[in-house]
Image (cartoon, rainbow, N blue to C red; front, side, top):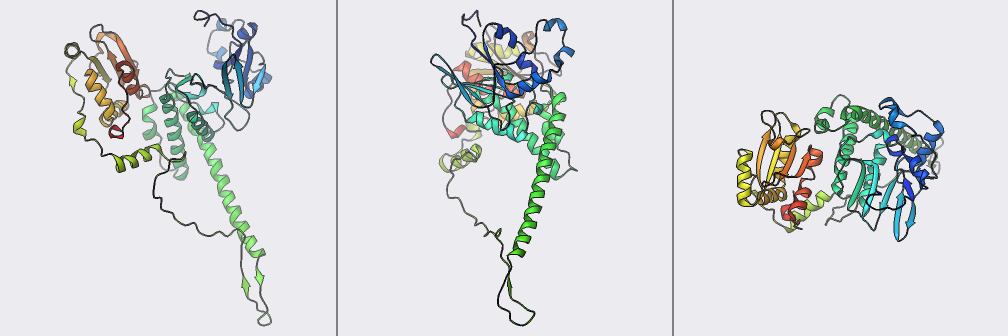
Length: 424
């Protein structure tokens, strides 16, 4: 930071109390900075537990490194002013803060810490509740920003939330289905595409267990409340029995009433789609496209045509003033099949690839990636300049490939057409 611009560090905000987020506070404290962090940091200081990182890394790394108290344990929303710049610190959790969000409205930038992981599997242990975590992500989405900085991952566009959001949604759906039907195992089918993401083996099983405990307890509580409500209704009805005049000795006419009795709800037919926070964006798009715009046929955006090898693709690209698009895949690769499906269904993406590139496929089961380019797994997408062989885009794994359209637009200058005709 000092090499870029020599400015003093006035505030350091710890977005969580995890060791990776807080070690190094003492350095900035010595420079005169005010240290801010979540309420859970205070608990960590009081417990004085040994650092778990000491068990994994050399002690020499932690020379003169220690946990120190913060100046402020932030447990509510607040705003810091530095000159004309406003920095908002947001506490999204319902209880004491474990995670904080730092929001710069003018710069359209947000720091979300452990709320989003786009190159590592999300860890539920860092949050009190799966439901609350999903609600917090909605709150982050609803803020106005273009740039996002996460604790884990390099994506910085609004699509950086996609991986975490999709995983948490699938986690909740799978666990709820398992509670309803314990005999059916849906886990392997649902999470196959996440197995190549970092820390899948370490976090996924624990995530399933923690989510199961949360929703199982919630279900038991709901069932008990329902049973209590039914009992209360019966007792109320019995206590509200009103007798009319005696018809004959020993007989009576009785009428049962209950304060809890409600009229049945009427079914209302919706005449138009109204956009609310609860309404699915996809359903709105589908409804609008049916009513307003006839869908574009597949023939108008042809499938991607792949050259037989890199030399051919390079020669064609130079001749046609295009880039080279390399799709790296492998046999028995489930995410590779997902990428094929995405390219098949996304007309906007096919249009850009056909217009600006010549494409080839490389199967690493029996081929090597050209030019000695390395890849950590499949699928990988590479876009390069055919004249210099300079790599312009490299996206590894489906988690990153989801940003393919944005990446291609950034290097081609292609503007997104505001039209539903090319909606996925």
